Image (cartoon, rainbow, N blue to C red; front, side, top):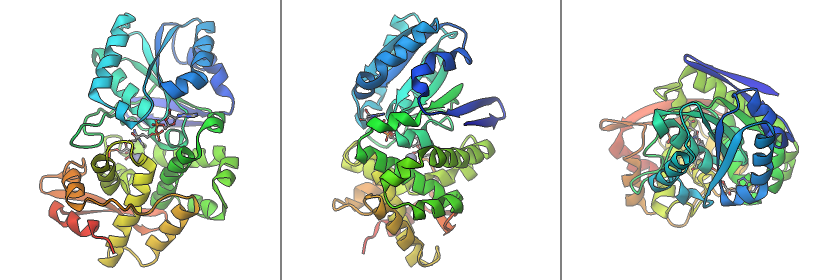
Length: 355
Ligand SMILES: NC(=O)c1ccc[n+]([C@@H]2O[C@H](COP(=O)([O-])OP(=O)(O)OC[C@H]3O[C@@H](n4cnc5c(N)ncnc54)[C@H](O)[C@@H]3O)[C@@H](O)[C@H]2O)c1
Ligand SMILES: O=C(O)C(=O)C[C@@H](O)[C@H](O)[C@H](O)COP(=O)(O)O
Ligand SMILES: [Zn+2]
């Protein structure tokens, strides 16, 4: 299956095909002339798929090498980006050459950031290997690294030349990582796709969802395509993709990157902000319970014992949805329909109160 993302200055195709990682060389040949390629991955993905990918690229005539970073959220840093700039320079890469991100959202965000800033931007492809990256992070062109102050504080908007999604790579993904991808799937359904929500409601477990992986991935890619095509640079509509992230990102930052996964933090964030908004009469009654039930069915957390309220608030002050002394938050009108509200940032303390 192919989905075309069409933006004012760039268009690219998401290719969703089981078993296609083994033919990555052929896929890249359709997009790029033979040139230097650096595959950026992490140690875990390298040991599973690195050799196969490099062999296929070399067979297709590319001068391909691979560099890997330690697996995990702490690799999404400026220090790691600098190591990668050195690796690209060492290989003698030029603006004619390209980077391929092979891995989850951490590798995707980091490699995209590096490719978009090395020599002010070189060619770039996304090859996502986690569920989260296949349904969300590989699409739409947000690149990022974290800093001590905030999650994704530094980044660029830079679209890839193409995205190759091979659902077969999910066969090696640990259950906790499958579940965190499901959190972003639930988010996509909750903000913009009531039909997808209904399909998720009919599934019994994560195994059941994986049996329908291609269909679910395609539905999420469609949600993201639709939103990003209307607001590539995150000035209005795209903010809805941040449902659950105001509090979720603050949780990741204050507990320490990698302590809870991004998807777990988003799951907690969606339920916390919805519950608070429902109490304030900003959301119809019952939506929080539906969200919480859906996430719990897929064994995702909806609350966390460690709740450093003051630190969470301080992290929220660096949210990119803040503007002056205000912040935009994402709430739900209904399942499948998001809305954006603006409020003074101090009022975020109300949304951090727990029962
Ligand atoms: N740019 C965006 O639009 C966007 C959207 C959502 C999330 N994100 C970012 O994505 C990151 C989270 O991504 P993630 O959940 O993919 O985490 P991740 O990249 O850390 O991957 C999770 C773990 O799975 C391993 N892994 C990857 N593929 C595997 C496979 N096929 N088999 C076995 N193990 C595999 C990795 O080595 C890692 O240990 C966060 O930093 C988040 O901020 C970005
Ligand atoms: O693509 C988007 O836009 C999103 O908000 C998707 C989110 O799932 C993702 O976590 C993103 O990285 C968050 O972006 P940020 O702008 O809040 O850093
Ligand atoms: Zn996210």
